[in-house]
Image 1 (cartoon, rainbow, N blue to C red):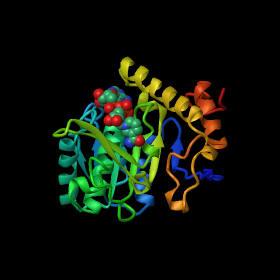
Image 2 (tube, protein in one colour):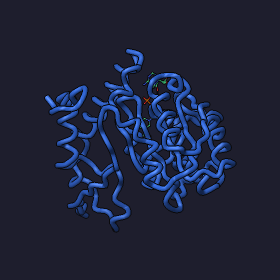
Image 3 (cartoon, rainbow, N blue to C red):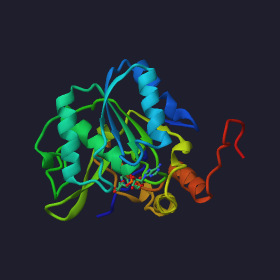
Length: 261
Ligand SMILES: NC(=O)c1ccc[n+]([C@@H]2O[C@H](COP(=O)([O-])OP(=O)(O)OC[C@H]3O[C@@H](n4cnc5c(N)ncnc54)[C@H](O)[C@@H]3O)[C@@H](O)[C@H]2O)c1
């Protein structure tokens, strides 16, 4: 029997704003989206750094009501997810803002999911660890402000955590988990400890290499229906452009406006 290969790939793009200084726009974004009550999920190390201060000032300037959840664990666990979910469930929030690396953004995604569609925790967790049930519908708006270079969690429909009891790292994956908006402000990486800057830079390099060398989309089996085409659909002409640009080191944005180098 001959395999029927796929002939299509799909660009399902994220909503991203890139630029130095854009963190201060988050309060205005909430205002423009008509959102009034926000759970701010922030990495505790960032709360007193310029990033945290700018976010707080922005929310206050826009007169948004908000609560802070800062018990984010680095490399989050189901324990820290549960803590965030509990706060999200009782607060009647109409929006989430996540500030930090993948650990904080993924925590906000879980808090959003289980407060919007309450369920047994393992219901949405990837099979075979969990039951792999699909997310029932769109989530509450989430604005993600990454402060590391590597995970790209602001663009993905994935949240990753350690399930302590079973000693496994697993996750939840569904397109509805993808943040409504990612505010990518290079200024937020200025305070990264050198080791984290290097590690998250290598994360970018690995993602680009993986993407460029992945099995091409037209060497994968054709799905029976478009919904079954995987999110990670293989190397394709568009992802090759991004991957090669990342492998080249990318263009360096000018510090304060002006043209790129
Ligand atoms: N959701 C996804 O699509 C996705 C993809 C890949 C990885 N991940 C997950 O993301 C997590 C890792 O995220 P990460 O690599 O972005 O790092 P992180 O969020 O775990 O942060 C690493 C460390 O750097 C500190 N830190 C972060 N930003 C800082 C800043 N600007 N200044 C000072 N300190 C700062 C944090 O407090 C922490 O100690 C892992 O759990 C990983 O499994 C998620």
